[in-house]
Image 1 (tube, rainbow, N blue to C red):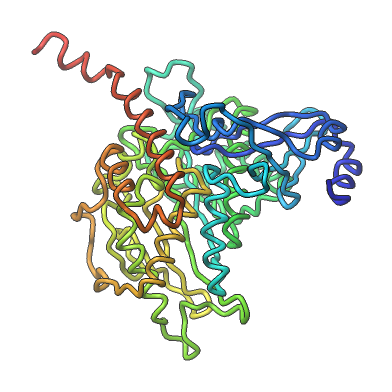
Image 2 (cartoon, one colour; image 1 turned 120 degrees about the vertical axis):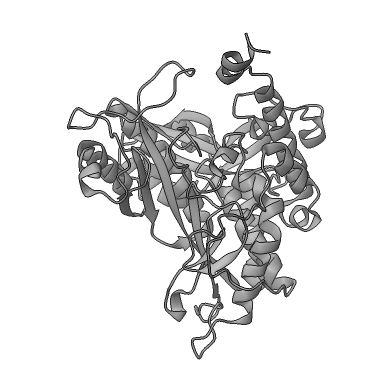
Length: 444
């Protein structure tokens, strides 16, 4: 245990420490330890199978992935992630852990380890990715009945939003107490939140993060989701990161802006010295064009995700690219040469941030290392083009068949992730929906 970690806990009079990891779904798992036990132990142990939970708490046959004995793994705290939990009633700290085998090697099933593996490939080339996620989410009225549709909450006006309020300042101000407390929590939690806007949907908001290193941003997104949900509960409402929570409203995305720096010079490798776009820039775009489709499962990991990826609903159904073209899955924002970047608009906000970051960087890496060439940029609307998988089953098959992505992300991880998602789909498919009861029960 480092002295810096001991000093942090002592100076803040911390009583307990939340020791967390992210499973494949992105759910925080772990233990809450008294401070002294945390300091004495220096690490925690969890079964490797914890990483394989579905979103509804089931597990596939995990023997091929963790062995017949369901062994432990060692979870080692990462000092860079140590924070105080601002909403806790007592002085509580939180620290994200890395999952290791007993010989010190990373556990390949861990989403954080998957992202680290991709970043190491960049490091070996002398490259450093820079990312900036944009996160959309909905505030909704509290409801304990999952069979009832979600609805916008009541703001200070006492009325729910009756129409779309894109970029409305007044609509944001209607929830000032919530956002003021969320802003305070984000500052205390060192989350680096930059901009707040009201998005198109009723009760839909968007938060932008300052750009930075990919692992750090994935950590911040992971922690931000919980901060939003906790803050909403304190104000008598829910916050949801479902990709498509309401039938008639737009879905919620996590667009990822990405560029790559030369490690030695700090210069953006997407630009040449004369300011023009570099070959590597176009290679990166081509990598996204080729590999986003087989990687879709990592950008749209739930059955609900594919309700968002539909035409004319402010979400892409294609992997075309274009300059400042929001109908394309790959958008190139207007920028200076130093800030030249690519925006992947396919990921939903329901992703595991570690896996979404790893996947989009892997696609771009393959494009650069394979020397791929992109198609011509799309100058008009691309909304009429369908290229992405249409459902979870299709996406699972596409990822299973893509050898280059398995080689980068880890074959065992890809197999396990697909099996987790197959189990989720099988569970979902057993549900008889209200639509089926309404239209089939007495008519067929």
